Image 1 (tube, rainbow, N blue to C red):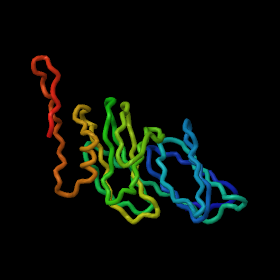
Image 2 (cartoon, rainbow, N blue to C red; image 1 turned 120 degrees about the vertical axis):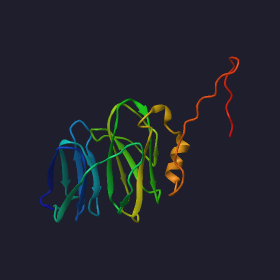
Image 3 (cartoon, helix red, strand yellow; image 1 turned 180 degrees about the horizontal axis):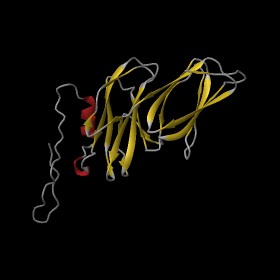
Image 4 (tube, one colour; image 1 turned 135 degrees about the vertical axis):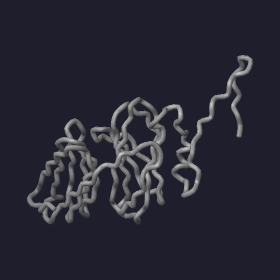
Length: 219
């Protein structure tokens, strides 16, 4: 814990690798998270801070300012959690406490579209996709971004006002772009329960007959 005093305090973070940093304060504060090359993230927390930040490797700064004419007091606690590497399919199940978050990473060798989702007991769980520098690319329960080669981070979090929830991140299409399930198949992953079949088998295209356009097959 860090004792807070004065009108402003600057916490310098120097991480060897990216991590999720959880900040909690006992008093109202204004936070500003600063990473070189990115726009600062500024938030006011009138009932005390309870935030989760993706902090990339290298130097960054977390500025804490007093609200109004008051001075800082109380303490700030900083906790760091490591990153879980994700592969194709359904990731490990985690129990999210109110106001908590988990951070994951995945790598792409080639540019492609992928499916991102979260299977959870509640639809209030949010997922956020970041690039390797910590910039937000997209967010939502279901995402279908087209990404360039590189490393990416995926955070899932739960609002402070919610009850604890079990959740699992889902990534589809990492291995081969031509087998990426469409949005309705990704939705099945999100809504499936234990024991439900989750295998997706791509349907080969219907061959043309007599140089005519192939007909669309109906179920």
